[in-house]
Length: 319
Ligand code: HPA
Ligand code: ZN
Image 1 (tube, rainbow, N blue to C red):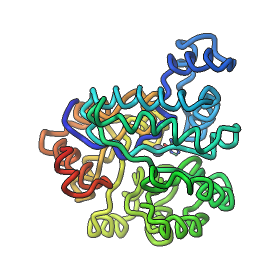
Image 2: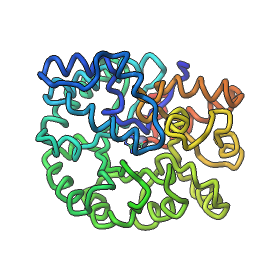
Image 3: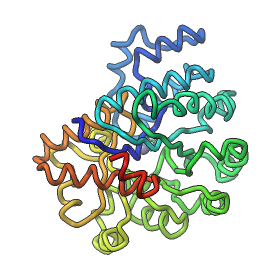
Image 4: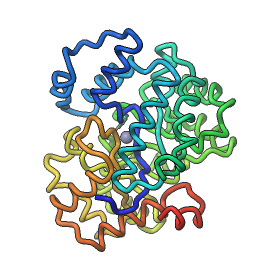
């Protein structure tokens, strides 16, 4: 679906298609424990968030050089552009790379090489959001923020991802305070597998401006009321929810109820190489499975620009 849209919830490491994974493995002399791309694709059956994360972190082994990150981002931007994405706010997971001996500079400079030409080459404006892994320590998050200091001109904000349950947002109060003091914007995954209380904590303790996923807000009417009143954007990822079994089938997705409740919803792809579709595919899937009409699809697309970190007039131009 080529309706112009902004993508606000996209992990660049989750755009690694099997073909590129094998190409990079060969280029870097990395052995992958899969015979070929078909065998690898067959491994894309997940029970929950953790079973996905295990494969997601395993495949990152092929990402080693600046050129690898540049190629990864270029491949994503070309696909996103073909599906109507005009602006992308792209997550990356530096701790997962630092742990493998890949420096912050390699990741940011590599992604940056693709991003700096993205407007001219793909017609997509871009920003980078650095995520902390919530199953790592708060001290590690602080060290990561420190390591990012030389690159802050390239990074618009911070986020929080990885295994949610048992890792409440409040664990990262200090690093979010430090990030805010550096002028960084703040978002966090909350209410994907975790309870509605994590969404409240992300807002109250971390001061986030958007909630990534936020699906489980629907269990708390008082929270829904607050999110509606304060126009807090939710970056939903419908195909991801089905693949990670947060929702049984797409036809059961609460998106229509969320729109009816007045929530500021957006539709995004999360980890498109793993979950069966890019941004436009997610729009098309909810149109078909949930019977969304033209007006609702336009509302979702309009919300994506309004909820972006583009200045208001830039957002209107990108649209
Ligand atoms: N949730 C949490 N962490 C993640 C995800 C996700 O959907 N994708 C990549 N890291
Ligand atoms: Zn995500």
